[in-house]
Length: 304
Figure 1 (cartoon, one colour):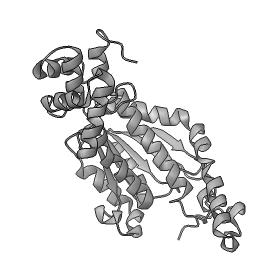
Figure 2 (cartoon, one colour; figure 1 turned 45 degrees about the horizontal axis):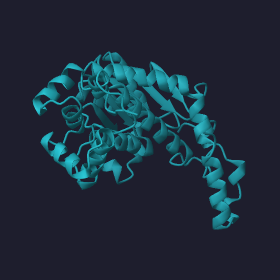
Figure 3 (cartoon, one colour; figure 1 turned 60 degrees about the vertical axis):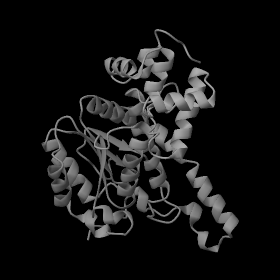
């Protein structure tokens, strides 16, 4: 059995050494103060995070995929980020995917032993027909997960671009990815519990990766979710309606009617209203602009 005690994420945190003797209020302060350091740790890795995002944007533009790979908390966070892209950005569910060691049963049950097999990570990449247009994004907060390293190695062999995210320095654990992101969050409040600071840092990074990629792909206009899936639920119908009200000046009833005429697609409705065209004409203009509503509207209106 390999000794992992040298890893930063396995070190004891002196600031929480007596946490078991603290009151609820004092425990809160210890954890909150530790969490406050995460944004600064993420900022240190800005260049690497942005390089990873550029790989993802290029892949998605080429019709490729972003595929997160992880185990335990890291795998669950990858599944979460991938699952949230279609309702938020109306993206093809196949464009952002996730692989978790142990399969989807590992989302609700601990199957920790599944992470120990590099060959399973390799097999998962082969099963998904990974190729040169794809980006495989491995997540291993402690840096050592064999399943993730196996997936990264196989993805590289198949011609894909690769990203590796860990919360330990590279000199402690190396990787073979094209982009290596290291978020040094330091020792956890509960020694080795990387679902805490390391997990929070991971979610921040994954949110940035998928969100900025979708912004670059024209899924956002100004800071509004113009590709929201209004067919998903009443909340998102309301959001789409309010976006139309904000950008067109229509009252709520008129905006709701316009959204319905656009088959629930906010971008189509915007172009219909602001370019004075029918649905087919709006869809044609959007197709010519690769779905970027800003390109369609900028020549005729400047919305603030």
